[in-house]
Length: 145
View: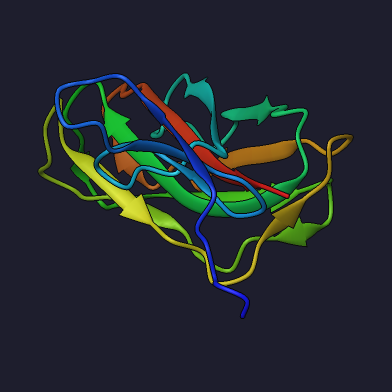
């Protein structure tokens, strides 16, 4: 008779549920996936159409989420931020920094299918539609292959 056995190592801790499952996934006690990496980049001014920066994660995987936090307020119109992988594959989602918003506001998108290889960069651009100098910190979360 063969039994199906879950093989895992437990890390000492308060609840003993920090698991590494052999042949499966790695997770923390709260279920946080340990195969996620974050690349961060600062967009100098969402209100300037000439703002363009690159993030280079240096890993292969699927982009799970992109988060942006603004460092100042904007007025006028929304400032729209777009993302392109490897100089040619746009990520279908954009982030709009809303007119009338203020420092500390956070925006999140979850692209449906956006994969990146270890040799590709992510281009971050803005349309410059808003008014007021507003740096935006961008965090790109990638689930590793």
